Length: 410
Image 1 (cartoon, helix red, strand yellow):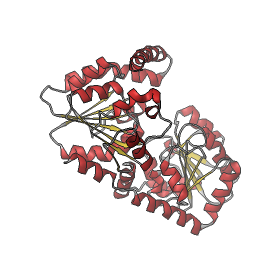
Image 2 (cartoon, rainbow, N blue to C red; image 1 turned 90 degrees about the vertical axis):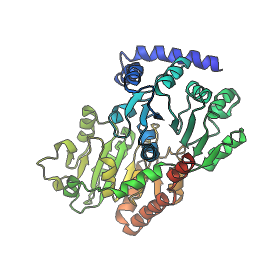
Image 3 (cartoon, one colour; image 1 turned 60 degrees about the vertical axis):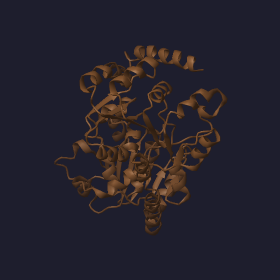
Image 4 (cartoon, rainbow, N blue to C red; image 1 turned 135 degrees about the vertical axis):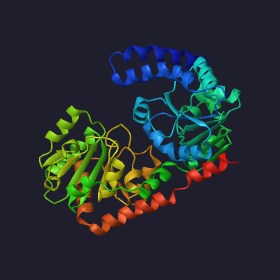
């Protein structure tokens, strides 16, 4: 099977280069991976001490960030190499202060793995969540480099735990330690003979907890709300926007709405704006506008949502109405906000737990969304109680970073 995997990797590489001619996002990845080795060669010396952090995309970066920051603080004399597989991570964080060098990870071939590790020669490797690359991990193991997987999450239906995935399971043994999010993940690994594992929880709880330590004041939000109740819909997709807009278009209360679409391309923003009947303004149009006169604000920018959630009375988090995957529900939860999501949340343990704790509510259709929003808007006691359930849930689950750093400092 490993031979087949290596063959398929080269086939994928060939097809990505073809598709890149017609797809901008894939083109960014192909071009970026082509530059990686030159960047490493020119910016890392043979005597440099280095630590390598790897994430698939932006979500995993945010998940690993509190651990990355703690490691960087402990090793100020090391160069930090940060790699991404996806353009959605690299393009946003390519100039981040955390790392001395940010690169795309070359595809997982034996030759790439050897060359990458020859150039980076890390003393420590940290992978986040699902990043299991067999050839890289095999080479890491051969070189006896300390490697840790953090915030990992495993399910019985994953290839590692099927007969055909036995060779993939060997890749997990390259890690000196695996920190998992839940008991199911730990049990699965131990049932298959992988014992260097412990439950630390999800580092995202520590990450969002840090949001309370910064100034979340945003002047345009103060002007827009003018003390009104506010529903913030974050990382929305068309399936969820359709339901929200139907509700907004029929809402006669003084409630204000902020919509932060996942896709902020101009033509998509204009389509969204045209579908809203009440007064609506885009963030990019806010200057010199009397914001309190508008009922709906569209965030056609990135980087503000985590602070905007601090103004929410109610939050809707996108992704789970369709099949795109639920976005970050912990960001609004840390502010003690009740949350609405779609019904496709089964792969997200934090969502299942918040629903169980009566701080989050799943809706599958227009009527369910209407009923739950009406309840949360009109019943202040219910709204505050639900939000406080989320706040307590976040606080209870913090501490993963401490456990991981205690291990690394041994």
